[in-house]
Image 1: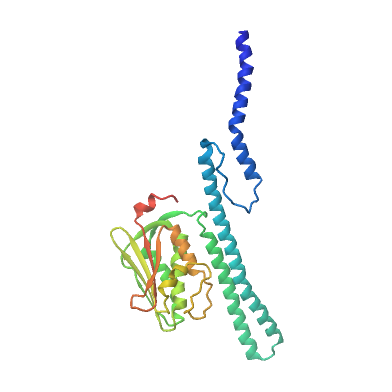
Image 2: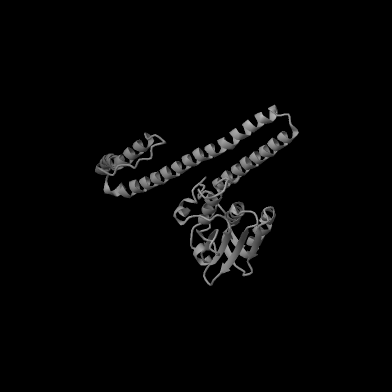
Length: 300
């Protein structure tokens, strides 16, 4: 028993030393990560690392890269949003100062109308910014079966007064029954922003149509307008936040509609494309939904 009793502490010491030697690279990585500035997302070095922990370091580097991209997008979004909010707020302040110094009733009424329009624009811009934030890929959504023809009809009825105010010929063709699996909040943001954009950029007495097309393996919704259209070489930029084309009229939009629609389409695993209008003028936004079987196989 004495040799066994003597071997136990020696073996324990050897095991402790071996574990300490084996875990030293992990402690080195932990110290390196702890000493990093939160704003620095540079990858960890692979040189001199044991082969056994190389997959771990690569996974950490991949995570750091994704965090860096996410933080960059967030910083750009905050900068863009603050700039876009600063301009209408400054204009409202100037209009209020003019209102205080104006005594004529007609001039005051005109300034009040301008202020009301400015307040509405700021309110819509804030609403759009919050919608874009809620559609972040990390923001959870609830998937359910949605009847596209019923959902599309509801959007059509909701925005019909807006089209009527501009004497726009607003039509809907959604007779074919179709359904998808997805988040209803994302689908509402997708369709409402596309239709709202079409109405806003369509001139008075123009035309906007919503068409639901179905096939054996997919469904497709096309929103077509008779507005100024969009050159093919700039369509890839149209989904960027606060982007405005050079050939569009000055309207009270937020330049976030297509960005929100694109983010919502990604959450629905749908494809959003911009094409020439069906009659050769205007723009057509086409949303193609994948088959239900493909949606069920993807993580929610």
